[in-house]
Image 1: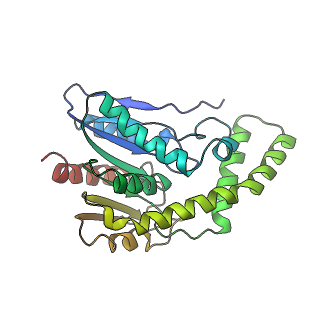
Image 2 (image 1 turned 90 degrees about the horizontal axis):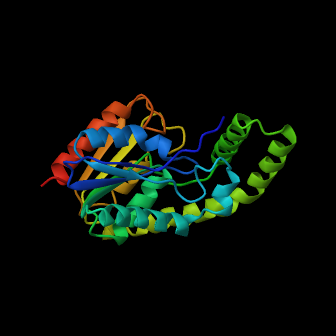
Image 3 (image 1 turned 45 degrees about the vertical axis):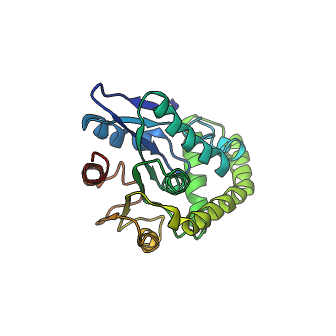
Length: 251
């Protein structure tokens, strides 16, 4: 039975600072829970919500109810959420598309103290692989819900006919985020696996080269795939993010 992933707000009674985490396209809060729990144990409050259209159990909702403008607002709202709970110092990290959204949010909101992007597509060239990954995720979800073959085929056709419009929005956001790199003033963390099946290997490095006036921490993870927050590299990633926070957030 499919269980909808829930937002999480991991509290720590000794915390004075908060971390906002953003998941990737077609992902959910599940992808960020390990990192969230780790940072909570290290003395932080951690918040992560599902982007609009995500985590509902219906992949079509990503196309029907989601969109870049909505997701950027979701990121801003997440920052407001932790501040409304009394945490004025905020850092933000995002995975994949969430990394692009975190970066764009930091470009716009200079009072976010620091943050970064994990496996983010700063070079975004759409291929059939992107579409097939999305369709594959959708069909996996439908099979887990025991949908009929007829319904799955109908939904598959809808997704294939409509995903391109959202892909164009993502491409535009990536371009604008790259163009706005000079607006970043905060310390910035970049992470990418060397076996990332979704990204060009130059993706993170290409953005690093745009940040000549920013303190950048750049890590690669040998033989690690795209979802660094849950794959074999997650322990190393967690410790690298903690070291980055210790260097740039707790001063």
